[in-house]
Amino acid sequence: MTAISAALYGSQVPPAVQVTVTGLTGVDLVNVYRQAPGGAATLVRGGVEVVPTSDALLLVDVAGELGRPLTYFVEAYAGAAVPTQTSAAPITIPDPGRHVLSDSLDGEAVLVDVVSDQDERENATRGALLRPVGRARPVAVYDVRESDAGVLRVYADQPTTAALVDLLADGRPLVSRHPWHACDIAAQEVLYFTGVKRARRSTAGDRITELEFVVVDLPDPHLATSLVDLSDLAAAYPSPPDDLADIAADYPTLLTLAQDDLGAA
Image 1: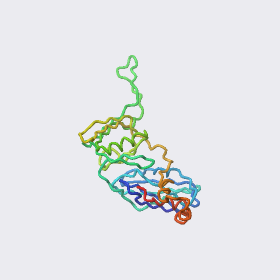
Image 2: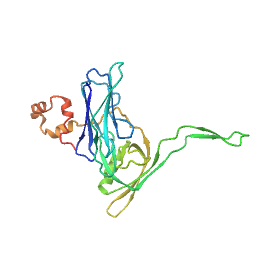
Image 3: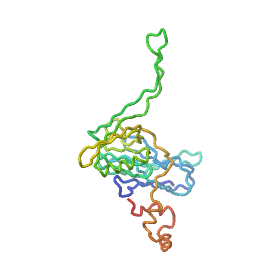
């Protein structure tokens, strides 16, 4: 029988959520979701249309909403039967009280402050006005409105600004999470930044950074976020040739290795 559990993972701020799905023998396809009270269910990175190759699936979620109870659940498909849905106990990611920008793949995060709660939004119109001769009013040909675009103004001290510059340097979309929920802005979004401007805020090196953005879909949702890699193993065992027996004893399977954070932040 399929089961799912969720637990806070790692020592970073905010922490990630480790999601473990078991009982997948005989299951053809699974989707893993998260959902906050009153919100829509959202697919978890790496948990999208997964064809199980073992009895268990291990995911790490670095994009969950902050400060709200999240329910993780799995939909399991087996043959032509109606998919079964199993939920984990609700879990809350501690709210750091600041705006969080993080890489959706490795969870690297930077905490910044939004200037005077400013988050400008605009929607460009996709359509055309035709003015045929003889008509008093134009004819409108229209399409759905475009995605939100705008400018996010944040300020941070010198080390945090440097970390933000490094995070933006890869050019990938970032997950944007903030602690307020009673507005028209989603508590969790994926933003692609089209322009960045930085201005000095004080002689101490603080910066106000203007981030021009467009709201986009999560890129490559089938890619799972890595829990640990071989560099973590090398750090835990500085002399691998002498420690192979110890490694095998501690981690008899790759799953047990993945479930151990090896002290990683």
